[in-house]
Length: 327
Image 1 (cartoon, rainbow, N blue to C red):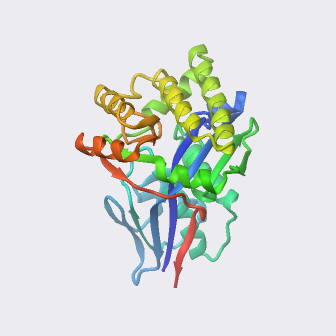
Image 2: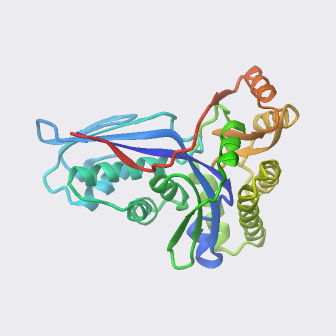
C-alpha cells in the first residue's frame, strides 16, 4: 500500500496570472503558500483483477477507458497500466470546490502514489508539470499552474510563469517573526458556498485570449500587487500586506460578475469593521473561504463565529507532496 498526501494552498498575491491565456503573452507572477490541510490518496494492488475507485463515488470497472473520474482515467492511461489491478482511495481534510486548490493537490498526490507504486521517482517540478499536463493539456481544463506547483513544492513560494510555459519557483525570504505573524493572524472562514472554478476561469481565459483590454489591465494590476505583496512580506510589513489584500479583492471582484455575492460582501464588510486589516476570497471566487489578515484576531473570530462562519486554523506546510506510507 502507498499513501501519498498533498497540501492545499492559499494565494498571497498575484492570483489569476498563472493561466496560459495570460502568461504566454505577458508572463505571470504570484506568491502562494501551502498549508497543513491535505488531500490523501492511497494506491494498492487488490486481490482480484479490476480497477476499484473510492472517492465521492464508487467505481469498479475492468478497463481504464471505462473509468468515469477524468483525472484518474488520464493518469492510469499516461502510466500505461496495461493489465489494471489497482485500488485507489482518496480522502481530504477539506472538501473540493472551496478555493484551496484541491484539484491540483489531488492530481499531484495521485501521481506521486502511482509512480511510487510503480517504483519510479519524480522530482517536485517534474511532478508539478505532469499534473499540469493531465489537467490542462489532456483534459483541457481552463485553469492555471499555481495549484499543482505549490502542492508539489510546498512552502511559501514565489512563482514566475514564463512565456515558454516554464515555471520558476523561489522560496519567499520571510523572517521567522513574519512567518509566525502570518500564521497567527491570517484567518480562514468557510462561507458555506462550494463552487466549480471552471466557469469563472473559462471567462477569464476567453477574454484574455481575445485581448480584452479591461481583463488584461486588471491582471496586469494584480500581477503588480503580487510583486508589492512579496516585497511587503520580505520587509516584514504585514499590515501593509493586509492592505494590499484588500486592494487585490477590490480588483478581483471586477474580473467577473460571479466573483462574489451579496452575502459574501456582507461578511467581508463585517470582518473589515471588526478586526481585519484586509481580506479576500481564496481561489477563483464565487464561494469557498474568506481569508482575512487580522489586527484584532479575537474580535474578528468572535464576530465571524456569531455570523455563522466556521474558522479553519492552519499552519504552513514546507514538505509539499510526499509519500507518508509505503508498505
